Structures are given as C-alpha cells and as structure tokens.
Length: 216
Image (tube, rainbow, N blue to C red; front, side, top):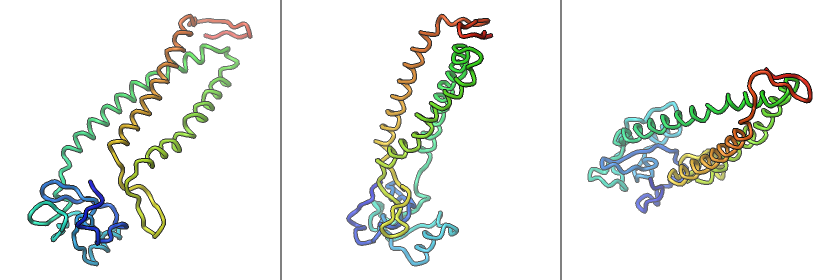
C-alpha cells in the first residue's frame, strides 16, 4: 500500500483518516482520497463522523486506480487470504504460549523447594518484584518504542499534532518483533537450563536446611 501517488499530489490527503479501498484489480489504497477519487462534502463528513457508515460506497472517477472503470471501494478488497494467515498466526502463537507457560509451575516448585519454609513468602515476593522491575514495567515502553519506529502514517486530527499510528511498515516490523522476542526466549531458555543443571540434585520430599526448618 503506497501513500504517495503522482495522480493524487494535489488532493490534500495528509489528514484523511485511514479507510482502505481497492480497485477491481486488487490494488489497495490508504483511502479514497489517496486513490484520487473526488469526494463530496457529504462523503467527507461521513469520514469524519464515526456514526456514519460508508462501507458499501463505490467511489467513481478515481484517477489513481488501475482498472478501466476508475472505481474504488472497500468491497473490492479480498480478505480471504489475510483471514487464513491471521488464523494460522494466532494458532501458532497460542501453541507457543502454551509451551512457554509450561515452565512456570516447575519454576515456582523449584523456587519453593530451594529455600527454607520460613523464607518462602519472601522469596516469592522478591521473585514477583524482579519480574515487575525487569519485565512488566519496562515492557510497554520498550515494545511501544519498537512499534513507533516502523510507523508509516500518523493520524493528524489537529494541525501539528501527532495522534496514533494508522499504518505500519509490516515487513520489518514483524521481522524485528519476532527476532527480539525470539532472542528473549532464547535467553530465558539458557537460564532455565542453568537452573535445571544446578537443581538436578534437589531432594524432593522431606529436606531440612542448616538455617532451620524442613521442606516437605
């Protein structure tokens, strides 16, 4: 999806909200304005007012479309391929989340078995504190920075005011998103292997500590 076409250079589409339309050959445009379609005042009002519906509108005389009829509409856009890929993506993400979550319970059990009973509450609290300090708190800032780096088009409802991102450069975004996440998971795997190696002699059942107290 391109945001700049020579045929729409004089249309003034900078503040046009995102409303993808396609021609009958499958070319996707950010909005009817970016497709070079002349918009009436009524149609512009419908774009601005979220209560109005323009889903089925067919925009005519669009100078940037590649089909001979010069028409563009959202109903010309095919979503079948995207829906299939999205379904596969979420299935694989769910499977990965289930596999990754299987390490949580063994980790808690090892933590509880590694300290005297009198220190278990403190160890759990310290573990939660470290997770919040190094993961929960910085996570929105870090991932927000990553997403913002690949934004192609920011909403501008007011002059000189940047709103939310309306369009991302998806190819490098998905590459860096999964690359960074994969590196973090690999580091976590190395840490888990290290813990398992040093916990191999951990005794299950009754175990008494020199500091006092027994683990059951």
